[in-house]
Length: 579
Image (cartoon, rainbow, N blue to C red; front, side, top):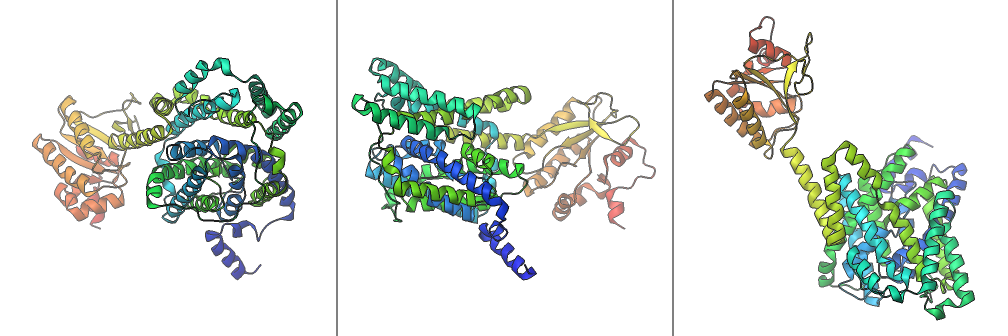
C-alpha cells in the first residue's frame, strides 16, 4: 500500500470508521467475527422481542430495531465489540415517555416510538458534530449506579403482570406494582407462573455455568413446544401470536410540531442515557483490547443507528453490556460481527417468524427479569462505603428518587445531583496550610505531616483549584479565617499557587480586594509557583505591578527565606524577568 493510499484511508477513517478496519481486515479474524455474530444473533432475537414488549411495542418491533441499526453502527462507530440494539433501560424510557400519549401496542404508539428514535438519533448526531462527547463526564458514577439499580428494580417488577398472568395497571412505582399484585394474588394463572419462574431459574443457572450458551433461545424453544403440545394458550397462557413475516421497508413516520414538542424531553433523556450506557461499555472493552474509542464519533454512530431505527420501523437503540460481553467472549474482532448478527436476524424475519406464534409472554418477561436484576450494583455500594461515604449518599439519593418518584424524575434529580456535586467541589476546593519538611526544601500539609516546621507570623497557604468567579468568595473566607485564628498575629501569607492553572477577571478583581484587606491589617501577600498563563493574566491586568515584582517567587522555599529574613542569595521573579 502506497503512502498516498494510506493517507487517504486515514482521512476517510475520521469520517467513516469502517475504513480503519475494512481495508486491513485479516482472514484469520473471520472465524471470530462469524462465531460472535451468530452467537449474538441467537441471543438478540429473544431479547429484542422481550425488550420491545417492555417498551409497550409489538415484539416484531424489537427485531426491526436489530437489523439496519446494527449495520449503520458497524459503519460509523469506533468500537469493535459493542453490540448495539434494544436494551432494557431505553425500552423502559420509551414506555415511560410515550405511555401518556398513546395506548401501548397501538399503531399510534408504534409510530411515536419511531419518531422518538429519529429525534434521539438526530440529537446524538448533532452532539457528535458539535464535539459534545465530554457531557457524559458531568454525571458521576455513583449517581449513574444508583439510578441504574433502581431502574433495574422498576423494569423487573414491571414484568410481574406477564410472569403471573394477571392484569396490573401500568406504573413506575415498585410499591404500587407490588400492592396491586398482592391484591390479585388469587387470580394468578399457575401455568403462566410455572413457565415464567422455570425460565428464570434456567436462565440464571446457565448464565452461571455456561455463559456462552444461548440460554434465552433454549427457554424460548422449550416454552413454545410446551405451549403448543399442551395447548396452554387455551388455559389462559398469553402468547405472542402472529408475528409478521418480512423486513420493514424504509418510511418517514408521520409527526407534527406538537408531537416533537411532546417527545423532545424524553428524546433528550434517551440520547444522554443511551450514550452514557454505550460509551461506558465501549471504553471498557476497548481498554481490554488495547485500542481507543472516540466519544464524539460514538455519538455520531449511535445517532445514525437511531435514525435508521426510526426509518425502518424500530425504536431507540444503544449498546448493551451483556450482549457486548458475549460478543467479545465469542471472539468479535471488528464491526463485521454486528453485520453478521444483523444478517441472521434479517433471515429470521424473512423465514422464521411463524415459529414464534406460541411463544409465551411470560418467557419474554423472564428474559427481561433475568437480564436486568444483574444491573443492581451491590459491589459499588460496598466499595463506596469503604472509600467515600459522601459519594454513597449520592448513590442512595439517586436510587430512592428513581424508585419512589419514577424514571424521568429520577434521571432529572440524578443529573441535578451530579451538577451540584461538580459545583460544590469547584466552589469549595481543598486548601492546606503548609510547613517545611525537616532538612529539605519540600513543603507539605501540616494536617497530614505533623513533623513539618512552621514559621511564627507566616502562613504558607495552598489553594488546590483554578481561581474563578464561583470559588473566589471561598478563597476570601479561608484567608480571613487564617488571619483571624493565627497565633501570633500574621505579618505575611505566602500563596503557593502550584495548583492554580487559570484565573478569570472576577478572581483578578477579588485578589485586589484581598491585598487591600490584608494590608489594612498589616499582612503582606506573596506568591510562589505561579504558572505562566496565570502570571500573564496578572501582568496584563496590572495586579503584578500593584503587588510588586518582589512579591513573586519561583519556589516556595525562596519565598519563605525572604519573608523570614534569610535573604542571602534569593532572587524573586522580578529579578529573573528583568534579565
